[in-house]
Amino acid sequence: MYVVDAECFAGASGQEIADRFPQCIQLSEFTTKLMVAEIRRRAFNENTALASCEIISYLELGGAEETSSGWTLLNTLTLLSSAGPSVVQAMVAAALPSTLVKCLYLFFDLPELGTDVAAGTEVTPHESRALLQKVFVQLMSRLCSSACAAGRSWRAATI
Image 1 (cartoon, helix red, strand yellow):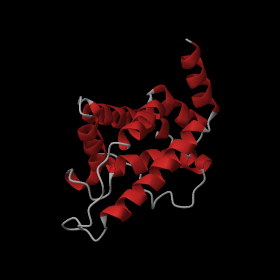
Image 2 (cartoon, one colour; image 1 turned 60 degrees about the vertical axis):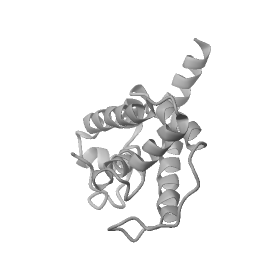
Image 3 (cartoon, helix red, strand yellow; image 1 turned 90 degrees about the horizontal axis):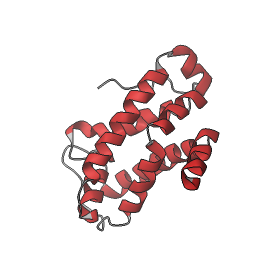
Image 4 (cartoon, helix red, strand yellow; image 1 turned 120 degrees about the vertical axis):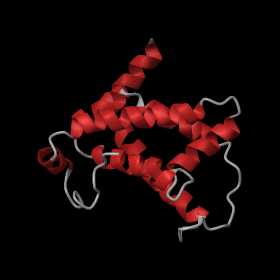
């Protein structure tokens, strides 16, 4: 999977990311469509508790999926979302904000967290969940505070 290296862009402003990585809009479109498809695939379950567990497992650091590809994808989208309005507009066009809002609804059905530490990691389930919440909220905040997301949701509500 092609992802943006957070260390490469550490401390860079959104404009610097766009300047140093001119393909960030195309990468944003691709990664957003992939994230939306992966979440929808996992949410396609009539049992909301199972759907929420599958989504959270995919998104959490140290999840059961191969090297937490959902976590890496979420971090890539969060980093790219700071690269300017055109990148955010691509994310909004691919329905990322509405997909993430639906995830929030599903997360109400999550079971209580255990205390076991996953094999091969030193992160507790509570730490992993707190880290996911932090990154998830950061991405949602960036998306929902943009003018294109606000305009799109208003238009959708009036149609």
